[in-house]
Amino acid sequence: MSVDKILAKTKDVGGIPVARLLPQPQRKTVGAWCFLDHAGPAEFEEDSLGLQVGLHPHTNLQTFTWILEGEVWHQDSLGNRQLIRPKQVNLMTAGTGANYGISHTEQTPEGVHDLHAVQLWIALPMNQEIKPNFEHYPQLPEWSENGIDYVLTTGGYLGRTAPTTQFSPLVGVDMQFKNAQVFEIDRVPSFEYGILVLKGEMKVNGVSYKADELAVLFDCQHANVELKLWAEAGSHIMLLGGEPLPHSTMIWWNFVADSKEALEQAVADWNNGHPRFGDINLEGSVLKRLPAPQVPNKLR
Image 1 (cartoon, rainbow, N blue to C red):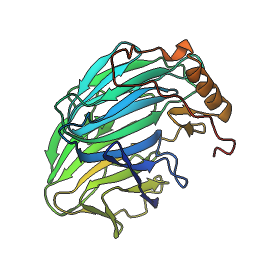
Image 2 (spheres, one colour):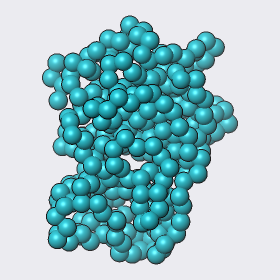
Image 3 (tube, rainbow, N blue to C red):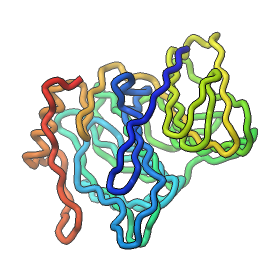
């Protein structure tokens, strides 16, 4: 087993501090997890509109929204409008291939003045035909064991199973520590794992990880390599894991594909109003339709 340390690229987005852990030049994916943003915690001014993300498209991925504080309205081109609150998951599936896509907006409701969330994308296996869909999960497996509070957001872990739809093997676990302690994770040999520190401090084989730092564990089939994990009291982490997909994953803007040509086609389709992405009526809204930037020639 090998361990990499990933540091976030942090920027301010509309008054919200956003730490991006994936993708990075040295690490594009963890299993099929291909995008990881830690947004907030943030408090909006009383006269602020809060989070206002205009209409934008996606291809060949699922958006996976995990709220820690605050509330967010999701609205998509399939006609869904759903409020998400803490300990709930919104899962939007864009579908695969050149015939499918989806578009959506995200907004904090009026009167909501704080936001703290983890926004993830899951790359879809492009050798499957998957249609666009949206699912909301208001209740997920939640328990306490050995001084740790768990919420299972997707997959199976310690004998529990989340109801969240998957198209490749994945796991996601929210973990909060009551005490300073050594701990273990339930490992699958074929998985890669990422452990994101949201709050506090964790150590992996003696190396310290603090907020907005990601430990990536790979080559986990070599189980004879010792893994020592420790967390300080009050720490909050997100464990993500999954099997790598059998094809390359390329990302540009809000699109995922397995080739640069497919990304260029998605950009052209969105900017030209192709019906694959549907639409939302924004009349009377502060939101705008966001144009897609052109794919750079030297996209890696």
